Image (cartoon, rainbow, N blue to C red):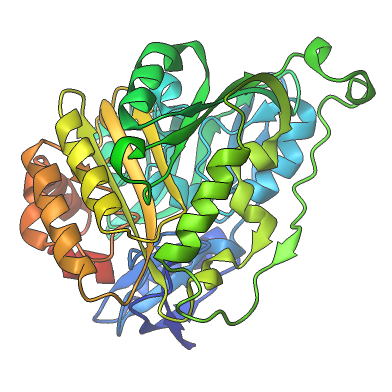
Length: 448
């Protein structure tokens, strides 16, 4: 069926023939049946840009192939089909004392998408990215089905981790979960006065927590530039829970509370409304609070409480810009925050995290350093030159842009940001010599 598709940012729609197979064999067959413009797999569409679009070609909707094939409640080892969502997985495993090893800011991501984007979370400084917890996976390449892993064709495995679906269609994967004593977290919250204060506190204190993230006010200027709300925590032992919750320490309720309206004016989010929101949000946070008990959904996936929250940006959609710069390049981070704050860009969803060691994936995004991610409404003609300039500064500092969030990077910067790009291309050519795996992202950036 011909269908118009966008990423989660709701920009740059293109049309493709979408199929929704319901078996692994059917999903694998989409590679054989690919038209001239190729095929790309798609999960729940939470890549912000055009990674799961394929204009004029085919898109294989993998969400119909979503069985939990095996779950060992003693070891936490899971085998799941690629279309299984974290949402469905967590409903099964949390009540049995397990959590995903890495969670992004939404539970509406599939297992296949988590590997293809090599997702990261609030615990990267401790646990790395998702692919580092994968034991093996089955991949339908253009030349056949292969089983790969860190110890079995590791070159292809790591080319697939972060490879944005361009090495093949993931059919299923086996990965390790994390044991948890309860479904609650003990959370410490503190306000920082500015960016320097946030960087200092995270540098000194993050290693003492499993999870850490800072919401950063990108509208504040002057002495308050980069002021943040730092939230860090760990899963709570049962005896730390309120007495009324100890009888069901693994209770889990991920209910959606609200639904975004179907239409929002394009100017609803502007520098004045966001400035007011940020001021209220910052002031209502405690200067310092320790040991607050929070459930999994508000700590990890707060935006999932609002179904269709991406509609609040209006019909023009929005851009998400996420960069990472290595430790030692804090000046580049400061200049980025200063430039965005100085122009009053209306972003109320801006987060700062501290990354640990990266993994061997040539296109994997994380590296040891600082990552800043923010949402900005689309449609402002002056936005592109600003982000282009910041991209160049990030590249010059040895940093990169996250491909799962990108929708507008200059292709000339790609090999600078990802210096092992040719290595990735060689591995891909081995398993897809005729270029059957295609996407709008791949063509736009000249990946292939």
